[in-house]
Length: 265
Ligand code: NAD
Image 1 (tube, rainbow, N blue to C red):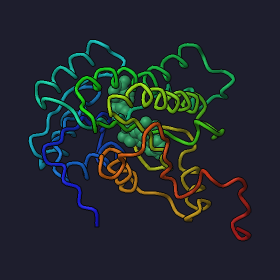
Image 2 (image 1 turned 60 degrees about the horizontal axis):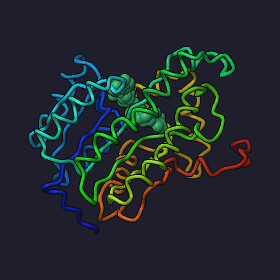
Image 3 (image 1 turned 135 degrees about the horizontal axis):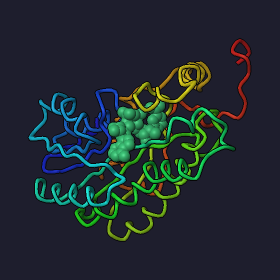
Image 4 (image 1 turned 135 degrees about the vertical axis):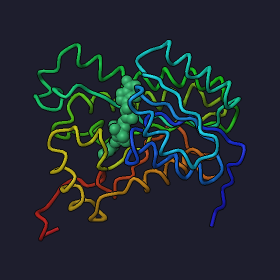
C-alpha cells in the first residue's frame, strides 16, 4: 500500500456546504494524511456547519468568500497566506446556475443567466488560481469538479453543461500556464452524487437511477471515490505526472455509446 504522509502540507478547500459535499469528500483524506486545511464557504449561514464538520481537524481555518467578489477573494488569499504561510493544494468545488436554466430549454437561456453561470462555475477557477499560484511552490496542485454534460447533452443541465465545458478548457489553459512553475491543474468529472447542488437540478433523481443502472459497473459512484481520486490528483507522490486532465470517476458511464434496454444489456 502506498503511504502518503502530508504532514506540513497545506490546502484550501472551497465549496463545502455540508457533509455530503464533494469538497468534503476530498478534504477528509487530505486531513487524515496530515495536511492542515483552510475552508472557504459562501455566506455566514454555512459557518456553523463548517465549524461542526471540522471540529476534529488540526487547527482548521474557516473563511467566508463569495467567488464572484474579487475583493473577497483578495481578502481570502491574504488570510490564507497569513494563517497557513503558503499553499500546496487547492480544491475548487463550486458551481451555480439560476434554477430557471435547469427548467426551460437551453434555447431560451438569457444573457444574465449565461453570465451568472459562467462567472460562478468557470471564471471562478481563474480568479482563485491567479491568487493561489503565487502561494504555491513546485508540487502545488489544484483540482476542480466537472460533469459529463460539458461534452454531451444531458437533459436539464443546459447552461451548467456549457459552463462545465468552459471549466474543462480553463483547466487545460491554467495547467499550461502553471506547468513551468511545477504546479498542476486537473478536473474530476464525477458521476451523479446526491448533494445539495445536484438535488436542485430538476429530474436529478431519475438521472441518478439511470446512471446507476446503466453504468459499466452497474452502480452509482460514491463521494468517497471522488475524494480518493481528488487525493491522488492533488498529491505529488500519486498524481505527480498528471496535469491538464479531466479524469472520470463515473463507473464508466461516459464511455458508453449506446444504452440497450436493461434485460439485453
Ligand atoms: P454542494 O452543494 O455540496 O457544493 C456546491 C458548493 O458551491 C456549495 O458549497 C456552495 O456554497 C458553493 N457555491 C455556489 N456558489 C458560490 C459562490 N458564488 N461563492 C462561493 N461558493 C459558492 O454540491 P456538490 O455536488 O458537492 O458540488 C461541488 C462541485 O461538484 C460542483 O462544481 C458540481 O457541479 C460538481 N459536480 C457534482 C456532481 C454531483 O452529482 N453532485 C457531479 C459532477 C460534478
